[in-house]
Image (cartoon, rainbow, N blue to C red; front, side, top):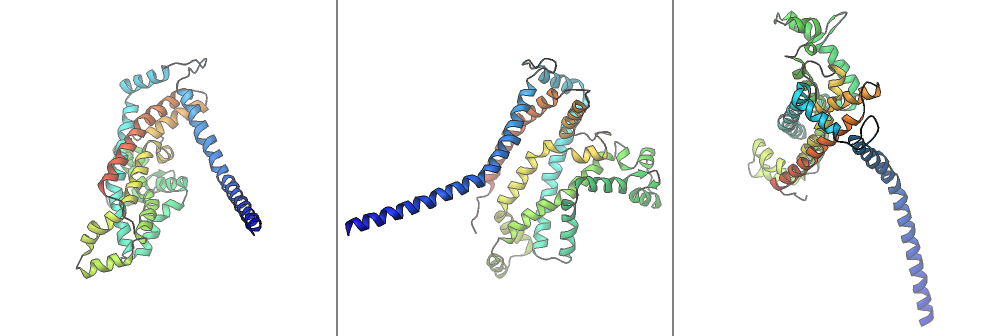
Length: 320
């Protein structure tokens, strides 16, 4: 009997370890693709970019000339300072103004305010349409084509609102007084959709009993929003804030498609992209934009980590 029990136990152990090995093999195969993708498209690409920043474009020797060039352009060229200031303005407007509005809209849609289905489509539509299409549409609406002014310019003329010669001839993107503000409006509208989905998803997870208890206690919508909704979805709000902060140096597509950085609209993302495109055309090199990218990575990474730590202290994560 002892031998039979020992043999049975041995067979069970073998079957258990066979299942474990198969599970481990399955998990390894499942994780192989993302690990390889991360190693190739993040580690290798970024490591190569770091090396480019320290290499001479002529002979590949190690040098700090690219960083010295950045300092010269920062102290002598207004274009770089303008790009930095515009990027900071974009960050402040999108995270300091747009994010609170998105949270409020998400709450109103969650409470099924009048017309909530229509508003949900309007705000989410830019997120499912190509950025190129959105920018082309926006450029047509506020611009001037060979066939005449776009709808917005035509409406302003019909209302007899005085327009400058630049705006009348080139549209709102053709004047330094209106170009950057117009791009900001487009980016604010197109940036609502995905954040609206994230915060709405967090609100949908809140147990309905919490809102029912608040209603019994006589809690109004304003108090409910400030005292209940915001603390419960704070982890999602802070995540959206951090994502916006981490991506502020990458914002270039609307600028490239609508103004190409003209009329005081350049950002850091477009500044780096412009030199990268010049390198592709053979009029510059990739070493300088690689150095600029490294500089702003060294600035942005600790800043994002510090802000994340501060946001985590604002409100404790709530399990529900």
